[in-house]
Length: 239
Ligand SMILES: C[S@@+](CC[C@H](N)C(=O)[O-])C[C@H]1O[C@@H](n2cnc3c(N)ncnc32)[C@H](O)[C@@H]1O
Image (tube, rainbow, N blue to C red; front, side):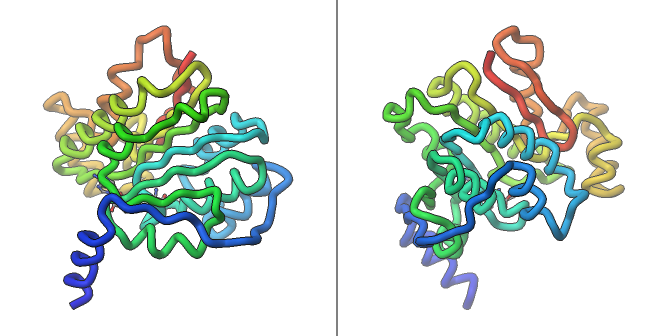
């Protein structure tokens, strides 16, 4: 019954958006304090290093944060980003193919966050950033989960997301991609032995199974991009 209700909600809300409803929220005085509080129950979380660096590069100034895959079973990233823009300015545009994240999140974020129920590639293609030419942008790609045994679908989806948004970005903008481990050791630590076996098998046939691995192949040797950190996530900047 729950499944059917969710399917109906997905259909009803598809291509709609909600704006956050929270009126008042705590403001932070440093990215350090924002990150420490956000991850207080999991201070060893593998995504801290990259999320922290990406937000620090916002320099406590306005950011336009564009996210694919709204808070669900991850790091509650949409709330983290909402806290950044609520403290230092800017807006969050977040999309998810399911309606549930949008409906759950609207009471947890401020009116600086726009929550969409839409396929991420369509969303990024349609997103109009022309009013935000002067703002620095942070793009967080975290939609289709990686099936580590058969990762290609997620890799291609992420590449399509990247190709949809990259023409709209400028010098110094940042791109952060989840689930893109640098190597087998990091994957094993974060995703366990079973997935690391799949990862090893795929590498043998030339598939480096991270969500952003095709994007990394594309930018790796380019003088137009700088890889800032690649541990479990991949963070890079347009030069
Ligand atoms: C790993 S979760 C996102 C976690 C979130 N970024 C966080 O850190 O809390 C992945 C989300 O991507 C969504 N998703 C899967 N395929 C998608 C697509 N094609 N377009 C948009 N969202 C998609 C799923 O519904 C799911 O909610």
